[in-house]
Length: 219
Ligand code: DX5
Ligand code: ZN
Image 1 (cartoon, rainbow, N blue to C red):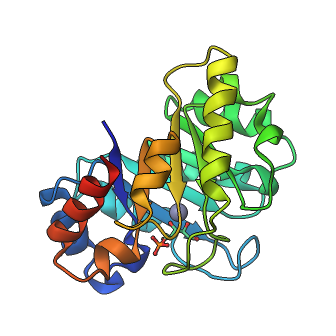
Image 2 (cartoon, helix red, strand yellow):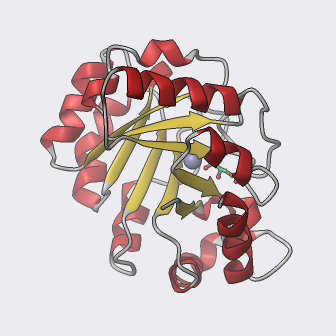
């Protein structure tokens, strides 16, 4: 079963609870929260207080994507705020294994994300420790960008690495430029969680119609 994780980056920041409620009513599986620091990526978004506020308005898993430098500094703050999944960038932390262990130590799920130009094989040694791999299919920093086409083959490569390693129960998530036009190819390649911001909150229909369109295309 494919999971849909709407990214609130494209929701109305003054009415986040309403956006989350709409997504939840429409059958969203997770809520994807994009944290940006103006350093690892050019944009600045939100931090632990907003995650804590979201925690109070939804029971859906909060899938927190840290696009921040040295994310190990903030593992406890986001875990305390109520994150269920914490994903860090491979490019942003020097001691990735230690950072992943710190997340697991908080009894929440740990993910590692790769930028479009970071090869899949760099995950080789960390894969057995992960709950989730996040393939960025745009350069992180902004919503509404176009899907980088080489991402599909990268998802398939990561799927093969997992199979070759006999590793099960790892979600392969894809983030950036996902909508009804791209959902089919990425799920065929092995993605199990689809993040979508613009296509959900800025799409042609209602939030419910947009989520349904993505789910249908993913099948
Ligand atoms: C990009 C973020 C994404 C973003 C996706 O840096 O990590 O989660 O919100 O947005 P869309 O779906 O609009 O490409
Ligand atoms: Zn994201």
